[in-house]
Amino acid sequence: MAFTDRHGGVSAEPYGTRNLGGAVGDDPAAVAENRAKTAAELGLDMVVFMRQVHGADVAYVTEPFAGEPPALDAVFTDRPGLGLAILVADCAPVLVADPVAGLVGGAHSGRPGTEAGVVPALVEAMASRGAEPTRMVAVIGPAACGLCYEVPDDLRERVAERVPESRSTTRQGTPALDIRAGIAAQLRRAGVADIRHDGRCTIETPDLFSYRREQRTGRFGGYVWLQG
Image 1 (tube, one colour):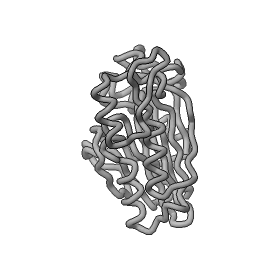
Image 2 (tube, rainbow, N blue to C red; image 1 turned 120 degrees about the vertical axis):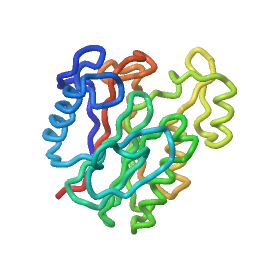
Image 3 (cartoon, rainbow, N blue to C red; image 1 turned 135 degrees about the horizontal axis):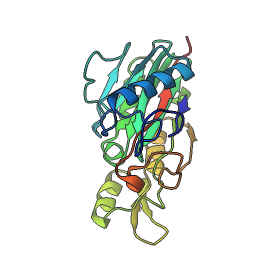
Image 4 (cartoon, one colour; image 1 turned 90 degrees about the vertical axis):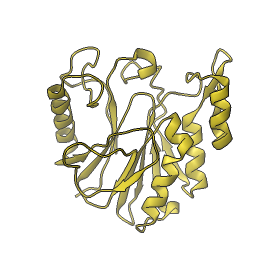
């Protein structure tokens, strides 16, 4: 497992420099070079990218998608050496592994995906192919924190109806969402006990891309793979 940051690539501002997102307005050649450079640094020959749409659809994969990727927000595999990439800039990249079953997966879980339950859907899909939630290790990557992620009160209450643990308040006392707490609670309810965190807040960390902080910006990645 690994999380990238915004440094070490070739993209020009405002995507400087290691933007991995192909749908944010960056030069496609720069994105392709950044993706290839990152894969090489991680020792990966092949990487699966999704067309993330803030939903809860999950797919089992054994190779990268040919052409335009389908609309998905979670993928998993049992193929060694195949990298799975989750691209974010305030949403949470969630990486899951059952080393005994030889399965790994990743989910893109922002506010809509958390509300829709993309992470529990990933755990369930992996379990359908032999993974055991009690054996799983999950890592929730950098995301907008519950003290920064301000939302309208009605939105907070709507999401909290589905995921009560996501209800939060900013430092200024305004309504907020803590998607990290919500995802952790979803994982526990799905039977996953070993939950780890890269607790950096994207809004507060200049080394990471943040849509909320910058609007026009790039995407960093969470990568997970089985060793070949």
